[in-house]
Image 1 (cartoon, helix red, strand yellow):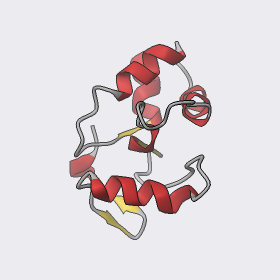
Image 2 (image 1 turned 45 degrees about the vertical axis):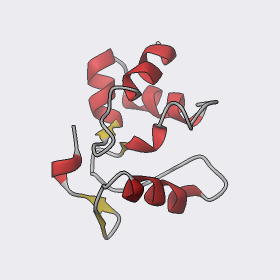
Image 3 (image 1 turned 30 degrees about the vertical axis):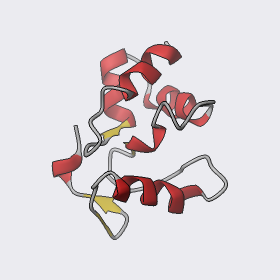
Amino acid sequence: MKQEIFNYLLTIPKWKVTTYKNIAKIFWVHPRMVSQTMRYNKNPEFFSCYKVIASTWKISWYNTIRWVEEKIEKLEKDGIEIINWVIDKKFII
């Protein structure tokens, strides 16, 4: 199941993000299982787990040395607008 979730990340366009909840619905698993999959991603440069956010559309946890700041930088580099740690719904798939 983990590999299928990682493969799904490859289908998310550069200018879009998704939520743990949306991925969970696709794979019929609990959102926490999705978050654990992201947490143990051994290849984050290839499987872009930074593109997965909370269902509140707020920026939260990112498992790197620089944590959330790095996630925000990567999202902004992809053209995602973030205002007060929240992503506009036009960027959500």
